[in-house]
Length: 223
Ligand code: SF4
Ligand code: FES
Image (cartoon, rainbow, N blue to C red; front, side, top):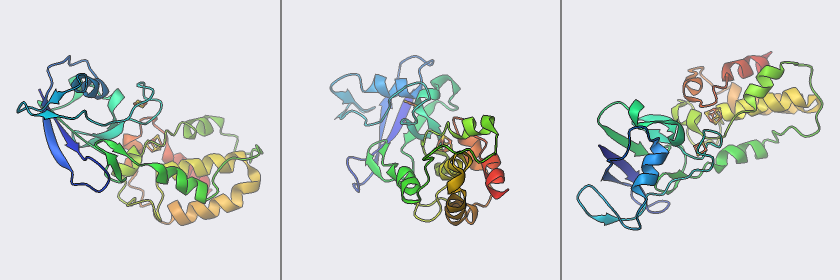
């Protein structure tokens, strides 16, 4: 099996494809494949040329941190939760998320997700429940990993400078439901940076690894 990886040495440098042979187990995850390819100090591409280790990020390796988000065979997914045996076709193609600046190879800078929340003052603060009472949905919304997979497929999210996307919408709901004093301010930033720009394609919900029902967060904010 061949693994094609879109690589980039440093921010702003020209990306290029490199292809590797993978003869490891099909039960491996894509994270396992990258580890496998990176195992030796000197790794070689499919033509026998020596190259450098592939840069990628991980922490938990169990679908709980979001660090390994990337595009695998054209679909945004967590590398540790995507398995070779489930990949269609005989080859695997891996590239970094496209909506964030590349730092190195498959490592991208997703800090805009957190910056947008911080700059909009979306945080829970002092716990004063707003009476929403839907603890099940609050729990679901709180599972957001800030992985950015939803932003990869969102037709309205470009670079995070005006429309902030599903991760922002869920955190708005969470903060508003847990701090009554902040509801008015949060409704305003929600409308400016999500409500006015969302065209309801709901593609975010298809790819979210935590299965967050963002549509319910939107309905609750509108209500
Ligand atoms: S809403 Fe889902 S896909 Fe989007 S950042 Fe949160 S966990 Fe990731
Ligand atoms: S390494 Fe944490 S989600 Fe994949």
